[in-house]
Amino acid sequence: MLSCNFNWVNCKTQHNRTIQFTIINFRVYYIYYMKPTYLCIGVQKGGTTSLIRYLNDHPEIFMNKWESHFFDRTLSDGELTENDIEQYEKSLKTNKLIVGEKTPSYCYLRYAIDRIYNYNINMKLIIILREPISRAFSQYNMGLNNQKKDLNDVNNKEILKCFRDQEKYNLSKLVSNGDYHIVRGYYDEILDYILSKFPRENIYIGISEEIKEDKLRYYNEIFEFLGARKCEDLNENQDTHIKKYERPIPKELEERLYNIYKSHNEKLYEILGRKIDIWENYYNQLAS
Image (cartoon, rainbow, N blue to C red; front, side, top):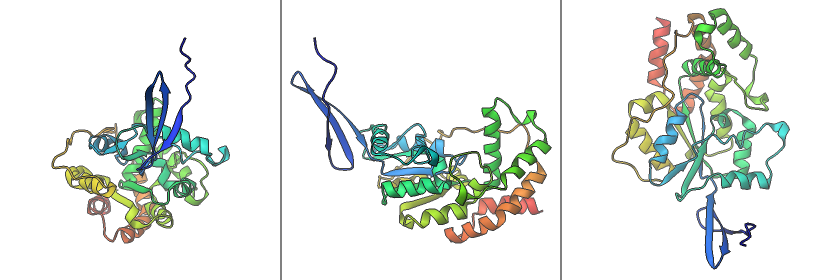
């Protein structure tokens, strides 16, 4: 009877690939896994799930279909071990050489950025920003859906209280992933910390609303950033999680969030070297 307790041998190859092989009855059986060369680190509700489909359609690029939540493991659970890293890399099985995953919580958790830096100082990072007011309200709606509720189950007073309770949080003091509707939109602070670790050329900053308006242009930018070839055309019907709300964001909350994010957006524009016209058109309507 053939034993199933095979002795597997690890072999390091080029392109950060590990091949694991064994010999059974004079035949070689192998599996291989890769170290990630890039990560999509955010933002939540910014179109990152759609990104998975568009990137996996490219013949040179692999993106894991599930959020790994590897680098954002709660600090109280301890630091990442060599065994943790090995199991993480084994989850990235592919023939492709450009390999990554997306976990949107990485971007705003400073300890997650520190872990990514310690893992690979040359990691390429993708972050897709969405207008912060709409992003925060979309996240709130997702939270309701996760509780089998929708906006018809809450009144404006309850919505406002939820957001007011969130104003106390500070990005620098977070030690675990969580809802944090408001601080996830402090894009200036998020990028400042990332840029304190990684060079600007290792970071692709996209704007969700702009990508939706010209997918071929901006996805080709992402492909080039990752070191892949441009595409002449693109299947543009792969967006996910598109939903219309039962009612709009309460006006009082909208104005409150506008005032909270105004200074953060101004600093973000300085980092980007430009204003985001689509966002500004929305803010001008709020002011009118």
